[in-house]
Structures are given as C-alpha cells and as structure tokens.
Length: 348
Image (cartoon, rainbow, N blue to C red; front, side, top):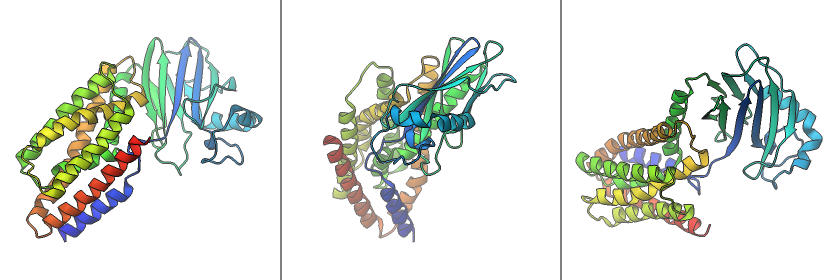
C-alpha cells in the first residue's frame, strides 16, 4: 500500500514537471512619488486588456494596436489599479501608453495622479489578473521619499502598503518567494528527491541537507551581490545534469555514504540558479541584505519541508520488498527527466 501511494505521488510530481523548471510569467510595475504627484507605470500582458481579438499565443502586440482602444483600456485600469494616500484616492489625471514592456507581450501604461498634499505614505493597488493564468505575478517597485521597496502582486495579494514599516513587509515577501521557488522549482525538487531516495540514515540525510544548504547559500549570496556570475545557460544545464548524475547512481546501486560531498558540489551550482530568480525579481537597493537573507531562508524552509514530507516515506519503503523496484523506477524517471532538461537547455 505504501509503495503504491509513493508511486502515485511521484507520478503526479513527474507529470507536473514543466520542460523549463524556472520559467514563469511576470509583469512589472513601478510607482514614483514626487511631492504631490504620483506616476504609476503598469506593464501587463496585452491580452489582459480589453482589446478584442487578441491571441495570447499570437505575435507580440505593438503599441499601435492598443492606441485605438485606449478609452476602454483606461476605464479598465481605473477599476483595477490605483493609489491611496491618507483619505485621498484620486482618479488618474491621465492614462498614457509607455514604451514597450520589458518582455515580449507586455504593454506599458502610465497612470498619473495628483494629491492635495505631498505624499509620504501610500497604498498601491494592482488587480490586473486572469484566473486562467494562476502563475502570473506582477513585480513592483515603489519609490517614496527617497526610499525604494519592492513587492509582488499576485491573484491573492493585490494591495501593498508603504507606511514606513515596509522593510519588514519586503523581507516577508522575499521569504515567501523563497518558499514558493522551492515548490515551483521542479529541478531543485527533483535533485533533493534523488539525493534522499535510497533511504540513508537520518545522520546521512542531515549531512546531505547541510552540505547542499551551505553550498547554495554561498553562491546565492555571491551571485546576487554581483561578485561572481556564471552564464544562465551553463547553470541551468549543469542543474539538469546534477539530477541525472545522482539518479544514475541510485539506479546502479552505488553507495551513498559520501553523498553529502556531491550535494555540496552541485549545491554550488544550484545556488547560481536561485540567484537567477533574484536577478529576475530585481533585488532592492534598500533592505538588500535582509531581502537576500529572507529569500534564502524561505528556500531552506521549503527544502526542509520537502525532506520532512518525503524521508519518512522513503524509510518506511525501505522495510518492504518494494524498495528496490520503486528506487529504480523513480531513479530511471529522474534520469530521463534530467537528461531531457539537459538536452533542451544546452540546445537553447
């Protein structure tokens, strides 16, 4: 029974693996406060806007295609984004097309607001989402009174409050992003699973987790701070290869007593992978260290949760006749998956 449950869970996990484990959909926003004036740049997927006939999978939309529909677009944005300061919640003075978005398919628009008094605290709303695309997030920077904080708007988090206590909120945001990245970074999950699958002792698993944590924490910090950088294609390819290497060892039944060394070596590369996510998000200039440490802590918490969930099942399976078949079947699947990812990433 246990073996069947574990196999079902693993099958569901493999079926959920996307071809590119770090690919995600992002939009971008930036709020600039200058005295009584606020400029709110919103970059969103073009097909979220009320423009008839847009194909989400079609070619990137140009500004000229949006311009004839600006009246409907302006009305839509007025209902879904906005800023509040104190008791004031003004309507935008204007809504304008901006330059092309940072990524293909994004349209940039600027909403301009005027307040009666200089803005020191602000609440920012962003609720431009589509339920059919639950992975979409909008990364936002808010500049107020010489300070810059960042947040991530999601389907269930559409409001950000800048009230002088934003550093704590920012750290919490990056902590949650770290946890989320482990649970959506399928290649990291696959590597951790391959490392503990053969059913080592608790002490051996502790060494593996420690070695992996120390290594990826080191390179995450070095890369995020710009001290050491490696090409993204190289990093992602080696991460895929790391899964295949460990899975092959499992399949061939090689001893795992020194596996913490492998965890440390490949952990150095996985750290560069984690840093790539932070580069995509854009670390803030203020609160950089706390945001970086919070993200790393979130990664560790997510990783530990995975180990705590899987390792007892692995130990229990070890006491059954299904242990070897399950290890070989799972390792074979991980080996194939790692090689597919490796080939795809090498070929670009």
